[in-house]
Image (cartoon, helix red, strand yellow):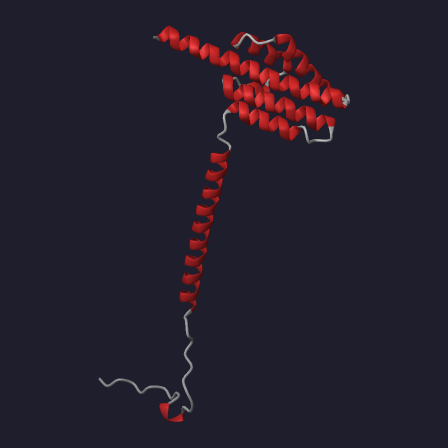
Length: 178
C-alpha cells in the first residue's frame, strides 16, 4: 500500500535571503530570569543577615552602659512626654535585662513592688522617679530644666545603685558556693 501524496506547500526553491531563527526560545528567557531573581534574593538575604548580625554585635553592651546611652539620647529630646517616656523605658529595659523581670507590662507600683522584693534598693527614690515619669507621660505635666536634669540623675543613680547591689549579691553567692 503506497503512501498518500503530500499536500502542496512551500518548497526550498522559492526561498530567498537568510532564514531568521530567534536567538533564544521563550522558555530559555523565563528560566534565566527565574534563576537571576533567585540569586538576587539569596544575596539580599545574605546582606540583610550580615547587617542584622553587625547591629546585634553593637547592641551587646552591658545593660548598665546600654541604659546610660539611652538616657543620654533621651536628654536631647525636646518634648517632655518623650523625655519622660525615654527615661522610663531606659530604666525598665535595664531592669528587665538585669533582673529578668518582665517589667515592660507592669505598672509603676507593680514595678516598685517587684524591685523591692528582688533587690533591696531605695524604694522611695524609685517610686518618686516613676511617679514623675507617669505624671509627665499621662497627665501632661511639664518639666523645667532643673527637673529634667534631676530626672536624668535619678535614673542614673537608680541604675548604679541597682548594679552595685546586684554585684554584691553575686559576690555573696560566689562566697557561699565556695
